[in-house]
Image 1 (tube, rainbow, N blue to C red):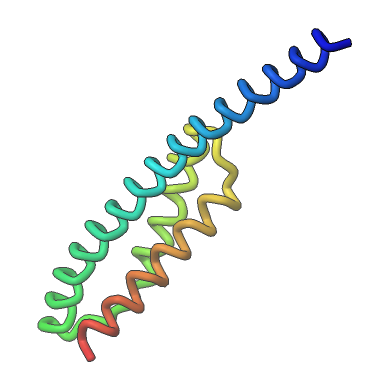
Image 2: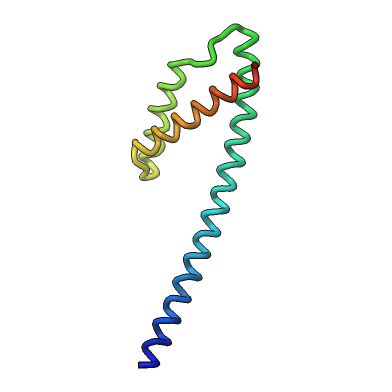
Length: 105
């Protein structure tokens, strides 16, 4: 009976260690994603300056349509659902639009 308890304890400890290691990897990935979003917004700022200078609207439907289609195809190649990709693209696009508006105010 004691051997079984020790075996279960050991199994749980190993499982917890694996989970902690995976969570550390997830945290690292999240940090990289945040840095990439920051880089993306810096580029968005440059685009907003040109749009403002040329009196172009911030929202450009053709660009959003292209992004949705292209990213859905790219996501499918990486086994991600269209729903996840569409949600992500809409989030990024809305974040970019809001960032452009804030920079121009």
